[in-house]
Image (tube, rainbow, N blue to C red; front, side, top):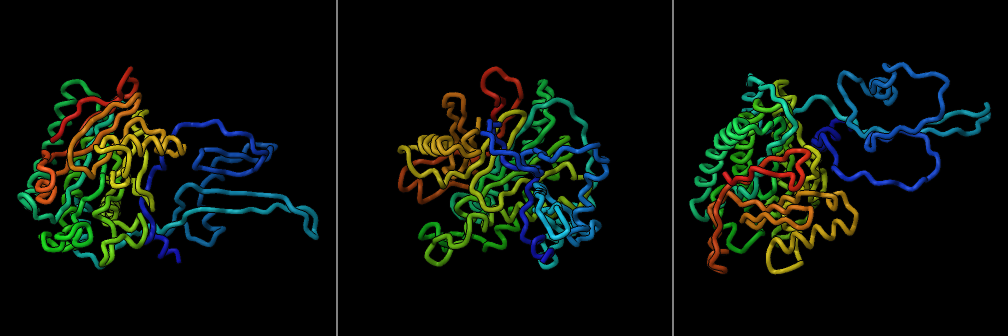
Length: 404
């Protein structure tokens, strides 16, 4: 059972960022809620020994060996008093995620090759100062697509983007931007898929799904491997796109939001980098079963969504994005607190400032769409959106935007 939980778990180091709201009093309820960083307990006559707060004893009480298993927060405890035949006694309720410390994927040989490569890597970490963050948006690679210059062109552009990003980081530091954190975002549609998204898709793809994932995974690992040593803190986050959906023969997604190839590529990358302590500063944020997530970046709440859920609100994609974000704000979701909304899906760049919020739509790196060009006459430039976020700026928190 513990093994099943391990293999079914998503790697998510951070929960959604959101504004702190004042909650109405609900009465006294003893307990510990680490998701809110809140502890409520009965009065104690003396302070507890700090070593008593280790999770090992809770694992042992639940029947797990602390050498082989660990608790993933939030970890919750509830207690209450009840009358028993022997008098009054205290009872406890535990709620926790427990996973194995051993991550294995024996049957995926490409995974094993990447694992060996990362385990033997010895990157030289660079000590940085400051609070600014650099953001790289990986959107709509659509690996395996034949249109334009095909998969070969996609790979060529990604391979060029990786060193270009490194040079951009060095350039900004020379200009005095104190970049200390790196955020790498997977905005969805990393693979093209093989069937169910448009009528000619099966005929037009160049690689099957296994090869699409393999190529994308190797490029993702290559990029993180090059960039990670340049920063003190690296966060890799992703959300699912429509081309990554597990679809049936009728072209309909039939499982869950989280059953998505875009996410599985990042799942595998997370397991690979976890095998080398030199990359312990690289944290992954992968949703379990959601289409979006939010992060606090240098004091700015950034929301990620692919964009295929932007259905109504106007003719143009930025109008649809505004309408969708307005609905999230009205519904008081975590996404409704976003200062910056980053999306993809529509394959062209826009940056719109709406009040105190900024909406950014990322370009793709594919070779274009024959179908879209024939229907609309429009094309867009391929590239990867990058920018920086600096805390304490008087107006817009983002700066240094460039498409590489």
